[in-house]
Amino acid sequence: GVGAFFDGVGAWAANRRERARAAAAAAATPPPLQVVKLTDADREALRLGCDEMHFLPVPDSGWSVALLRYRPHRVVHASFSTPCVTSPDAMWDDSDFLRGAGETHPFEKKLPLLLVPGCASNAYTFDVAPSASLARALAKEGHDVFVVECRGVGFSRPWRSPNEWADAKTNTPRQHAPTFGDFDYDTYLREDLPLACGYVAAVVGERRLGAVGHSMGGMLVMNLASGAVEETQTRPPKTRKHVTREGSDDSDSSSAVGVIAAAGEDALPWSPWEISRSVTVASCLECSDVSDGGDGHSSTYARYAAVAGIVPDYLYGGAAIPQLPLGPLSVGQGMAIEAFKGAPSERALESDDAVDAEDTLKKDTETFWERNAVSLSTCYPGATEPALVRRLLYYGFGNVPLRLVLQMATLFAPGGLATREEALARRDRAVRAAEARRRDKQSGFRRFKGWGDTSSIDTDSGDATVEEVVRSSMTGSDSAERDLEKKDEKGTAKDASHYVLYLDALRARRPKLLMLAADCDPVIPPTQVAATARAGGAQYMCFGDGPKRAAGTAAPEGADLKKSDEKKRHRVDGDAALRAMLTDGGEHFSHYDLLCGRRAPTLVFPEVAKFLGRIELFGGRVEL
Image (tube, rainbow, N blue to C red):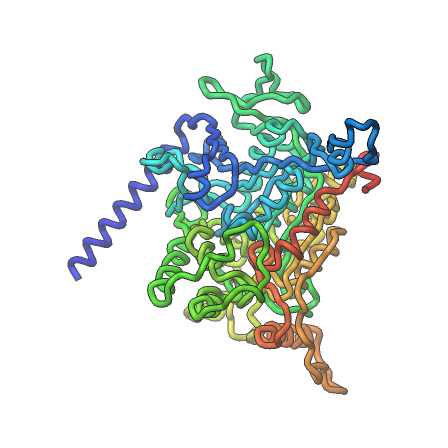
């Protein structure tokens, strides 16, 4: 008991020091931009294929975001000349025949790309192995690829601990897993990603960029493409003065390519940018029980949405905000399984070519990893190589800021993902409603009900539910007020950056967007992806055989079901179909399988490359 007490005091003191160091670092002068060119030894140690790592300091943040660059490959173009023999000497000259067969020309410059990983994920999502790497595949197609890791993700660097940035012996960059972080979804959207986009635009010399996002990364990509932070596309970050290449003050300029600098700080390249084409993988902007009509299965994360209404006030701001330790938990799971059964073979990962599942010898160890190392929220059993599952557990996951989780909880409310300000206001309304009900009923503890919970609600019990509060705020007078907020004094629609619901911005802008879904994804169900695609006018594709509808699932004749009851029944049917897909023998995919799975290189990657590689003429009005 005494030892536990002193251990607790020591942990509290350590956490307090950590928070103090983080606050001091955020106010300190940022480190300079650093570009690290990786050696073959670095790539082998990291098990990544990137050519460079760029560490871009974000002003007043205490962090440098990491951009992993995969330089484009040269492309071989077929020649239209006909091989022929022009003289007797030419009979021994094979240059004509080589020219006829094809020759290497300087590659046509394709759309530069930003790849954004999802919540708790990092760059390994896009490059877990040579045999399953979207980043390498797109670089082979001629794209200049940058995987963006925002603050607190992967190789991003905390200013407070420069001695931890790289390995002391080899100087190879290292990952970081912060335990505290005062940032959320809008921090990534409003600060980190706009700075990264402007930097990439300046480095590659192109205003038009493409983007690919997985899960939460797809949400961020949709927000960038729909103009949710439009003011950051033509002006550098407000925290720094804009200086042109000639050195004159040009803080009001919106077109000149320049650099960002403050007094005494090193200059950072920056240029205006726009997202011209984007692809999302397993992502949507609303995942409520009304957005898809109640036809599909519910999200496994919807049940946690109630956390937005019950956490203490102090967790909504300040340096004391903890992170959920998902990184250590995933590593611990991998270590435990490996200690019990050993590591799966990596024979299938040694080449760049995809390996057919039927050609892979499934040993007892690999079968055990397939069945026990992943949950359905990660991979469908057997869809991803066991060795890749192990890599994801060891390298692919990190900690998650609680503030980020609190804002992401709005994804499961009617209306979908909301801004930071709306999320806080929504939480305050829920708390006030809970207090009012508690006073009225003079009862004790009252719980919050999360979205996706199909249990019945006893309206006379006095239970305070976040769901009810949000639903009431989405209808009636509140909806009229929101409609007015979207228009200016003349009654015309405001720009997308004024929307409090990010799905509304997507509806208004309708960017060029391809949305991909997995049929057996319990995190972002395919019906929710399809609903967002319809709202934004996007192209939609779902991979997998889908559920096999069992006979007799229709409502009995003469049944008088209320609309809400009918939606619940459909949702229960959808959840049953999700469970049935685990044993029906079909081909199915889950949340990470579209990027890391065995079939991803042959099914998914070509579709992504084809969409991003389309040639646009006449300002994008004609596509080839």
